[in-house]
Length: 93
Image (cartoon, rainbow, N blue to C red):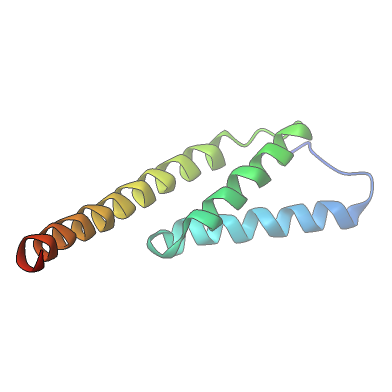
């Protein structure tokens, strides 16, 4: 994060830092429980941060890594559901 970055009104700085800290905790401590909506929210937050001129490469990298973990998890769930559906179709239809 850019150490020189500051809002003129401290309240906004506090809100932003709390959001970053919360996102970071989620990404580091519980990435396996994050859902699509969580990741979409983080991507939107990052876009807003970039508009302020913040350097958040570290956050973008972590969000990308966790997004890939989520994509793989969802793909495994979809593959399992497709196998089960194929089995049902073979058995009952």
